[in-house]
Image (cartoon, rainbow, N blue to C red):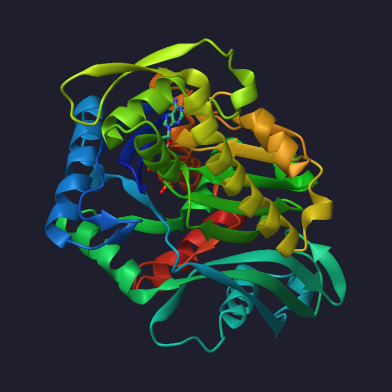
Length: 406
Ligand SMILES: Nc1ncnc2c1ncn2[C@@H]1O[C@H](COP(=O)(O)OP(=O)(O)OP(=O)(O)O)[C@@H](O)[C@H]1O
Ligand SMILES: [Mg+2]
């Protein structure tokens, strides 16, 4: 029996911090062996606003996962999801002469061209998080996916550069440093998420991945790679706020009633269905019509989906999405959301569950864990993505690149 290897993931969501530990055995089967969640105190929309509280909340999600997994996260490679409205993307290009054309394109040529694609002028407060090659071009031949060992004298790359704010990135590193998690990689959440819920075919044929979390993030994959990413300011959290106002109850009661009885379309509910909720004072209960609940949810959900629709069209990639739309994140568990989404988006819609690994059903059947499980997939399979290493670890990164292509 060979050795098994563990990988950890930490997803800093707007409604929860989640930690997942996975174990890959010698037969390359990966199983989730631990998980934990905690409220995201100290984070505001994924960005650290209070270092002590952020460390405490991430620490408690990590401790719960460690307890279940029977091991320490700091001893595993840890992939940490990053998000926020500071994230943006640009395109980068690079071109280099191949060092030894007769021997074929080597890893050093790849490193050179990828480095070149990053030589863009960025403001001092921004840094590159990922360099995702969208295509390589070998002696003018476009569309090359794996250039290694191909014959050619000139190697070019077109890449999507994912950029984030230095402060936001650095502060997440501070929290991880305090938790002594050193072997860490920051990964864009939607990129990670696409690994858990989009199949190779979906990515190849073209799909839009919509993560209906506390806020909504969204990305487009085409020809096998992520091509566009965007965080929208509104999400399932706004639905809860609307329900609290509309039904005159507390946020926590609204959250409960939304999860248990919420429906995305009022027309899906019979006229006489009623649900019981606590009133805002917390002293008594009252009956409300389930159709009323749905009629509070529907316009907000419609607004979110309309925003997604505009973004899909603004991206200029709407035509190429043959695999349709994949909804994931906690909000995708709302009854009827797929039906409403098909109406608004005019495309086939499916719900993405992170069920490609083995593990407890609370995780693998749960779209709210799509990003955390995606981070694990990214960690164990993300071979063609060039994540930026922690500061000063360029050499380690180069070693990794060699491993990916060997
Ligand atoms: N069964 C359910 N029905 C409807 N909504 C649900 C259900 N379960 C969770 N949600 C909603 O999903 C949202 C949280 O989703 P998720 O856990 O994916 O968000 P997050 O990862 O914390 O946030 P984000 O990804 O936006 O940063 C909440 O608004 C919650 O109300
Ligand atoms: Mg999330």
